[in-house]
Image (cartoon, rainbow over all chains, first blue to last red; front, side):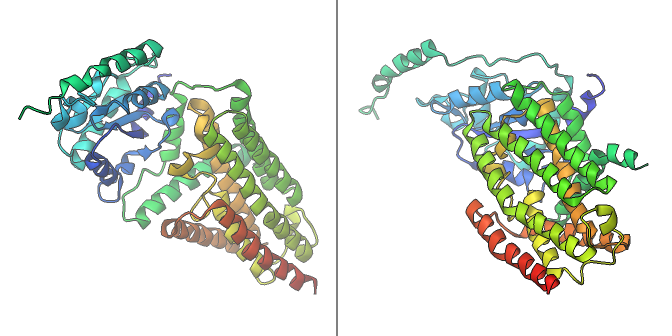
Length: 175
Length: 272
């Protein structure tokens, strides 16, 4: 309803997921939520439950182990929802770009609304990005948003097959 | 007039909850959320798409809220204290059924803990109301509020009630039923959107329920009751900020070991 829409940006509830990060950005997010930077003054709560959150804060380049959980958590958040990628790794892969066990950033899997740069992203930047995300959240509709990839049986077999090749791609003898 | 207050009960509880969030933030030297934050949260939850696991599960949350509302209304109307406690018990049982009705492991864990918390605090509530009966001669709230202050005759029962207040308002050290990052809210986990809002508002009513028990200790002088409520509110939040969570079994042991013996000693003292 139109009446309730302005209240979206007054109570953003955050779901934080670590997709294989080095914990640098996670510590900065906790610092942003803590007493010094105090994200709760915007009404933000770190819920830890996808079914009750609005903002999906993701850190880390997506490792093979974490990508299914990433997509699953994304689909469990009810619309309207906003995805915020925190840190260089989450945006582009960062220093892990091109590595064998890492996807380069989360935007291969889920649509991202705000990219926050930095290694690690500072609490000020995270708050800035969240305020930007709130503006986007207000303009969104309740239409269902889907991830780019889902992990069905065929997909799983495909990734297993693609990893058969992996041992040959690593050359230990060349220096 | 009293019906207006009954209708406004969830809003009143929301103000208490909002004030509490600001108070806790100030205790940690934070700015904290706006005072009306619970209402912003409620309006936002109205605007979310709600995912329902199955219909009875969603319905039980609504039932929990309305049963709690009835029990708070009964307090405002000055009914029998035992009726009120059992109405509240019924509301809790509905919530526990909701927790067991889905297949989520966290929901089951939360329901188990909710059940254990119920086992822990329910006897204390009954003993407190028995204490009121022994001193004032009636279980009716209207009659209890006509008596002189009860604090002089039931100090240990008041202490026992103080121990179980954190269980009801889900504060440390006894917040095992909610256990935010540990079991992700317990029975609340599978709710979303409008149906979560009912559980969120039920929490406001719990505040009114348990603090009105504290208020009864003031007797005919409402000022003393209000001071007692304010002091308890401060104390509970201070303890919440200063302590860690105890385990479920330890919670039951502490409540049975300390609060129960305090209550029994006091009742034996009144009977002599």
